[in-house]
Length: 53
Image (cartoon, rainbow, N blue to C red):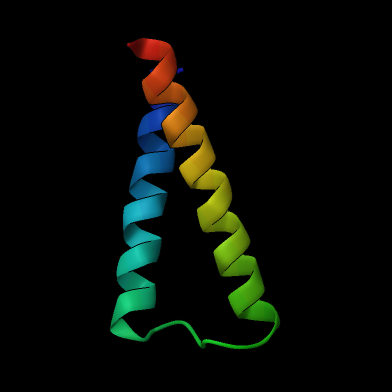
């Protein structure tokens, strides 16, 4: 489980950097995929941190 949580945290950080630097368009289908992926990575990360504590 720790590997999954770590991978989700890395995806979350990398995705947020991409969004903040403007690499991802703010509208459209690609943006929806990015935001849903970031939301899923955030949920997995939070659940993993809560489970380990």
